[in-house]
Length: 165
Image (cartoon, rainbow, N blue to C red; front, top):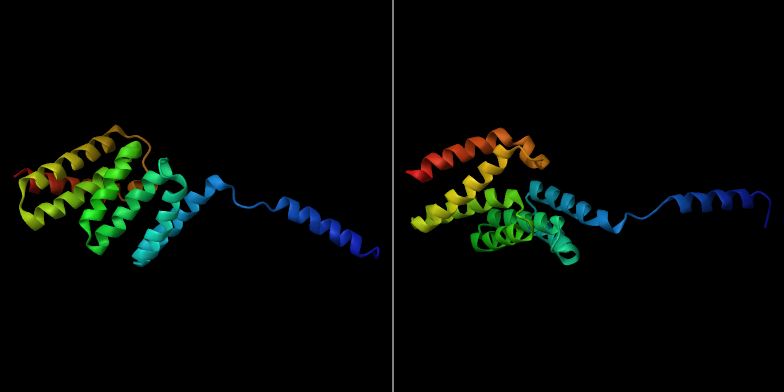
């Protein structure tokens, strides 16, 4: 081996030794962020695909709960409240994922507005009240809630006024 090649190979070896793949526990977070970008762009099927990968590897974890909630958001935007409700309820069974209460309340409210069935009105109010309690406790809020807290609180107040009548 020529003398000039040895230092180059040694440097390459050191570089490759320092470069590590993304640890497995970080992959769900990357996929969730990818799904959030797809949601923001309106690419609902791509978002569902990203979140489904999280569920496939980490279903009964906090990341899995978040993925179920976010799939519910995508289905709600597609107009499929049945699937959205199922996903929100799954998120709640995993770890009581708080944002799922808010989103489930919105889905139940939508169902109430479609049908006028007071059962859905009651369910929506229960979910909204549970989420309002979570906000009042002041626990660590996910960034999406922190950034939109004022709008969320306004929505909750309006929903309470409208649905409690």
